[in-house]
Image: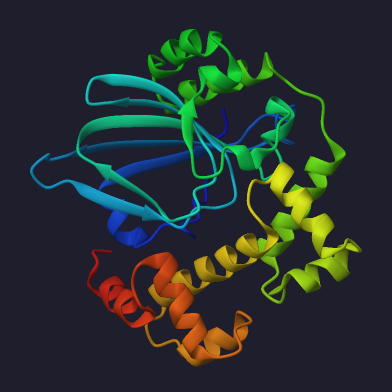
Length: 275
């Protein structure tokens, strides 16, 4: 299983501090699963229970399947797209092997509207069947993280679905929203793909799980957090304009609502975090 050499930290709040607390690895899927899976991820940590560590992630519009071994328990869970930032408290010793499905990539396995899972965490057996329990044991008992990812790959290959054209389209639009910072409104997206706003909303509800407006705003705020962490001298006013906000006040309000801190507080805390 080929590991990813470059591990981007976009979306991980105060990523520098997190790297001091846990080991993170990612692995690429094989060609058959590439249309559905973005990558496999692995995290391992050992943290004094007296001083637990809380990690916040500005979640992407992706569904995750996670095999978790923590505090002597093993679980197989499906995480829908969180509407709020995902917060995980790490304490003691544990490890997790996860599957990050592409935006639109989970639908072909489930064939139901993905927004039914939005904001929820459910047992994987309810979606993938009872065989998940056997696979959970194989995955979590594998000799290392690469072998765990390989076992997860083998499980998904037994369930390999047919590609869905509309799911693929939804994924392509989502990727463009992530990479094109000039895309700041649903109306722009509608014009670019020659779909009405209502058609876009239906497409995203069914195949991604959140609205196109949510996707655009989340990617722009992820970018803002990353810029502030890398360069505390960045101008908020310029950043607000670059990300499509009509004024600085709206940018600050959205940033605080999503991140939990104002840009000023976030920038200050990033400077004092360990590197």
